Image (cartoon, rainbow, N blue to C red; front, side, top):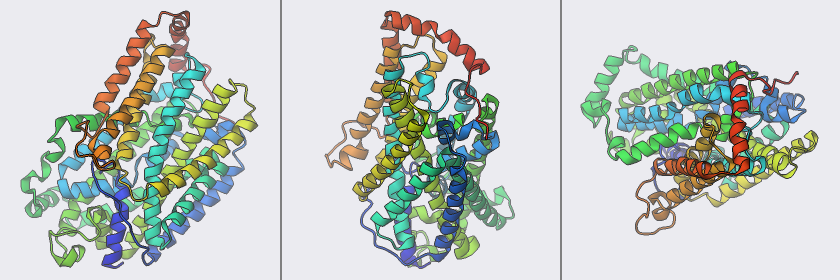
Length: 558
């Protein structure tokens, strides 16, 4: 692969390095079609053919809404743990965090910890209750003892907001990369990704989506581990030797292993940490995975496996970043003009790709490129399924039809919703081709942490929650998170081109989350209606089911 292609590829990979680069700014810019990377294309086609075969197999098993939304609740804890990890470990993990480790040392590890700490919250506070109380979507829990129509509508609105912004970011990144490596027009590339997503979800439902995510997780683990081992072996698998030599050549010197610029602004750092931590526990496509297992025990197992896999991979990434300082950072062929310490060919986000090429040649580079595509397809399939379930199960079945919808009709609505979301994602991808989309990730995590998480956790643990409080809390969290992001530098200055930002920080969670919790508490406390009294009394029934699983949805027989 020549230097020019690497340069163009690096620009495309920039989009995929979200949210690790959520504070980054700048226009995507126009990019030209490039010569083909045959290693990547070959491996990508193998992945696509394999997953289409799985979709064909899954279609024969997807006969009911339970099959479509949750794979009939028959996924094991280990399978679900792999799928969750596949949903969560994005190209940002592989590319963005490797580059961050290479550039900023231990700051990247602090960032990884912020990503990771959301999992214990899910494991200890939510996993078991999610499985016992829910059936298809997390709105099943928030609306369990509250007004079904109003609360489900609110949950569906916030879920679709998160899904759409995440989906656009993924679609733009996928479109740019396929355009680069396949030599396709950007619009054609978007249609390729959108079409594959619609096929996976429409025909295979959660069964196909789960296996796409499992295969992608395995590819990512194999690819990352291979690169990490090959690189680490050059230092005799000695962490001391690796870090000591890295500190000798890195611009930060001994400060490579000390906190730096990431914590320079404590408000942004805390807000970012809160958004990543509680946003994880509010992402609809992650929460939906807990309804795919047979029971609460398997739900706990799936979080434990996912946590272990994610923690392992973050440490692989850390090793890759440190190895790259010596293997990539001291090799002139990876710098423009051969000037060590100058501009990296393809930009900073190409560090993982350069490392793969250095230790495994073009074959390993092609494999990692294919992994990036697999990552995008797995994530967009999960997002599309979460969005379709919000539309068909929450809005159509529960709100419009008031729980009396025919199952076949609901399944049909789900599939139409998937196709509709795919078309919307393609159109938005075209519209946002040349815009800075970093704010979308901040918005997705901010909305998940501010609109979904407070109402969800309070509905599980606080007897005093009422419909009025949930609505005020959910909508205020949603609106404030969106407003804070729009008024921040990410949008107000970089997109709308005003001189200065009205809101001084780029991360909304530290401010929007307390608003959501306060409004939920205030309006629930002030609500003296008979409906509110009944809702509070119904908490005992909910508590028993949450603890014991009595009456919980069971796995479908296949």
